[in-house]
Image 1: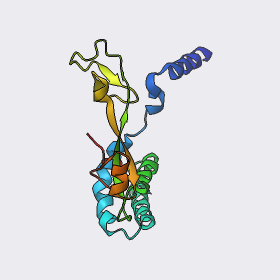
Image 2: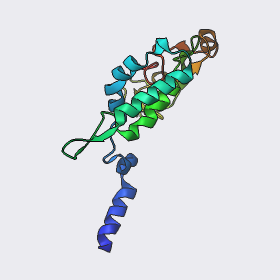
Image 3: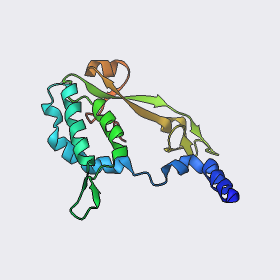
Length: 175
């Protein structure tokens, strides 16, 4: 028994990239994308009177989409959004510009290093950008936009950014 416990402990410690934590965990981004249309229909961004009202509306819809109920046969059925994914979805809503008429998402380029490319500049993207999985060949390939919220278009361009395409940072600076 002790030997089996030691083997399991060793596998958890040696698991690459936190794979032990990912076992059995739902794919929250996929789940959020699947229910995004329902959230947008219940809480339209353009109709939000202020940010707090928008976040409250989204939170209520998230509770509805993740609620679990017992069926007539006694089996528990839950909504399409796992409860562990609610925090991230709520955080995305709270960081959006909905309910803030002048605010915009701002994509500010950040320079990262191109690592593990044996022959930089040869035209083959064999390296990866640091803190990213983006393939690269030179440093120019590693200018990755970081999304921030700006109070206006002028404030965004003042810091060297460009206005994002979405109202929240989950999609605004997508390549």
